[in-house]
Amino acid sequence: MYYKGQAKKCQMEVPAASAIKRLDETVVNRIAAGEVVQRPANALKELLENSLDAKSTSIIVTVKDGGLKTLQIQDNGSGIRREDLGLVCERFTTSKLTKFDDLLKIGTYGFRGEALASITHVAHLTITTRIADSKCAYRARYTDGKLCEEPRPCAGNTGTQILVEDLFFNMAARRQALRSPAEEFNKVAEVMNRYAIHNSSVGFTLKKQGETSVYLRTPPASSALDNIRVVYGAAVARDLLEVTLEEASLKLKVDGYVSNVNYSAKKFTMLLFINHRLVESTALRKALEQVYGAFLPRHAQPFVYLSLQLSPDTVDVNVHPTKNQVHFLHEDRIIELIQKKVDSVLLGTSAARTFYTQTLLPGAAAAPPAAAAASYGSRDVQLTSVQSLRGDVEAACHGTLRQLLAEHTFVGVATAELSLLQHQTRLYLVNHRRLAEQLFYQICLFQFGNCGLLQLEESPSVVELALLGLGQAEAGWTEADGPKPELAGYIADLLVQRAELLDDYFSLQVDADGRLLALPLLLDNFKPPIVALPLFLIRLATEVNWDSERDCLHDISREIARFYSWTPSTGGASETDRWQLEHALFPAMKEQLLPAKFSAEDSTFLQVADLPDLYKVFERC
Image (cartoon, helix red, strand yellow):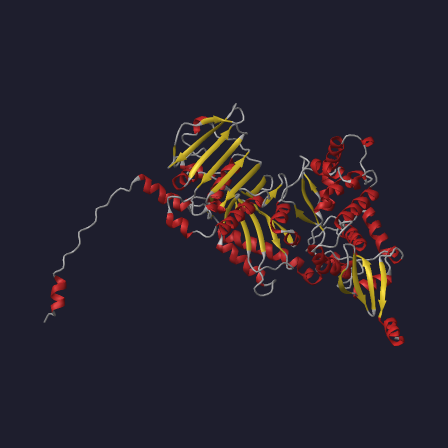
């Protein structure tokens, strides 16, 4: 028996099979481009790798709207030949290999020849390039993998500049699916940070178009640890342990840094490079999480930077469109070796966790003096001159004033130089500028060779700063001293000559071109008064006895302390100054400062009220 609906259903016609058609080449290329270039950060990764393959030592990246409007990368590499500009943006054109077997020994980042081609299908791309023996540069524009017109000669430096504009202009859905420009910029910065750390011999600069400040700048010929300090801060770099491993049977070499047991973060930060490629490995990540689970509190996460070098014939790099994954032989065995190595490194330093302190000076109540030596990650300087200067500080400490500072209650800021403190029943007016100078001098000595870095955004010229300082009355310049430009040049030359000492011992960085890259980070939540920087550089060059080791280290420490404790001669304290005094300087003085005996005699401390005496006054009234 059939229901009416069933009979009708059986009589429905079967739809005809659709014809298979060859996709238009433009559609194919856009589909492929969407796999390779998923967001501005992917495009930047491909372009960075091209610059590194070209043996660049300087890479400058400029972005606008998170890289969606503009993404420009400029390098000083080998450049592109004029005759190759017609092919450079076509798919599967490359200078890295000629046959499939070359993949087994590939030593470069790129090899497929898809990156530039993919970008031209989803953006407007312009290349300006010049090779070393060319009389001029050439500029070419591309669309859909082809030249828009013949390359034109133009002015330009050796190397290549690639300008990507209006990314995903023809893929509305992709563009709308991306996050805000600010979040896309963060992803661009993350890629830049990681390549800067791994390629420490190359100088990297990242900035936003139209802004004078620089988001990231790492000097060339630095180290991975230096760049970790620049990117993630001194607090992270201070807590890192070096990891090295070699296994000849697997043709394996591992270098890197992992956080110690004192470090704790909410997010697991893992930088993994295999044969210099930035990749991801879920298996290795889980293995390291298991190791740290035995050392860190619940929900605490570590920092890991590892560089694995394997024989190219054991690594398959052609397994993902964006090349962020690779397969390699003996993966389980290699992960096990790394896991055991990290475990042994952490086990050897786990005892330091309860003794870790920051900028601890002798006499502080927070921990015994031995704690400073027990903390891991700082080098123990044995220079007799430094030991002697430290001894002088300890011998000159005024015990009563030390107790006053250790037990004081901060009342408020009175003027640019004076603050009110309460100790027991007494109220004191103290000269915080003089105390700050003593504090920073002592930090320079007791953190000698272990100060953090305060990276400068603009990297100003020492010559220009010196000229600015010589124009100030405090510099005391007269015509008898000679022309200001000559003096400024002398100051810059001297600091460049002493740059290695200043960087190694005091974290004050001056590059070979005479640009100031970084200042020492002496105290958390405290920034030095930049307005006093020109005069500081002048005094650093002219008031330091560079011929005597002890005098030299004393004078540099003293000048740094004078600079960091500078206050304006007129006017009151700003809101920033008041906040730093209450939340950074006085807490540090309470914990660390060993006040000198002369502070009891030079009006640094003035008692302005005593509660029992006030009671007597009130009783008379």
